[in-house]
Image (cartoon, rainbow over all chains, first blue to last red; front, side, top):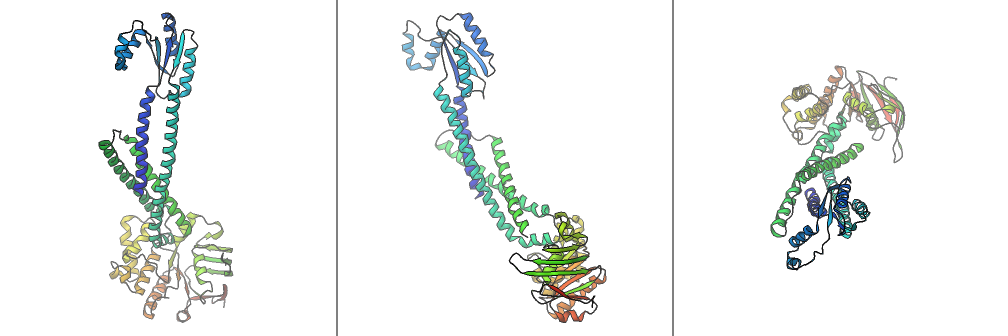
Length: 261
Length: 223
């Protein structure tokens, strides 16, 4: 039962991790394209490139000339390559591509840098796919909130199951506990085996959940679609929290019993 | 050793178990606490090892006072006061030796000393040959001896026994009583609750306290 509750957390972890991976791949593409007028002087462009590059959140500013823009378009859109080769005049604008430091790709930063770029008179437009950025961050917030809420709920369920199992164990050993108290055993001494038992149940439940999550991952990977396996730190954190929740649940159960006898 | 001063105990459900009881069990005394069922004997025994606190008045056990008792003090009291029950309260599924060892283990006796000490305690109560027997294989008298050995494990100052012979036949009762006298002869105070007046009459050297309806009505030491 504990294993099943923690398995749900494992599945949530797997989903969250993959969602996070997908989002960060998309997020890597969050960059600002600053389109320049054709009549912009190279010295002005160099100055803007240097100034934008000095903004702390900016990792790099790359100048894309009209010719480079056309080559890129040909590479990225091969289905239109014929159309591009027939052109007599290159219609694509020159631009500055502003790449941001990871973790600084928030909507607020993107908007601020776009606004700074637009202040240059030779800048035609600054685009960053605003709707996408908004959606991306909204999705990330929803994902995090859902994982947190459901993860907490199932963690509580696991703790309750461990607590109930331990209450039964405590009931079965009530005579032993009574004798221990009668002869002057400290509460710490009485608690210790139950805490260990709780931690062990949590740890074993966590281990079982890990195996089930891994089996699910292999199944999905083999028959449905590719996905990434959870990093070891997450697994370790999961096992540690399983043991921690187990110990807490048993501490509460035995604490209540010790107050009664 | 154990001193109750103007102690009353009222239960939440209503009704007094004890009313204004004062008594003092001194070092090395053998005291019978007698009275009918419901007279307050068991409440007095529970107050005497601080399993309960008085509603009013003061209980003093081996130097600790009921109105200022801490958890740590409670552990110390429990190690200075041995307790024997009518129904033995031994751990089922364990041997006589394990039942005694268990107490030594939970009160922090060094591991290497546990078994030799438990064996000595069983020898003290005359149960050496039965050390390896499971407690349910023992007779009532033998089980009570194991319980006494367990109560002696912490070398207490006083031994409390609540109707310890209540479930025993005459022969076993005599054996257990001889053991209590022997323990008392070595300087340990014994407070024994019993409603068996026949038994009390047999041991004329003991001090007798009588409770009736929650009040102390007789003290042979004062008579």
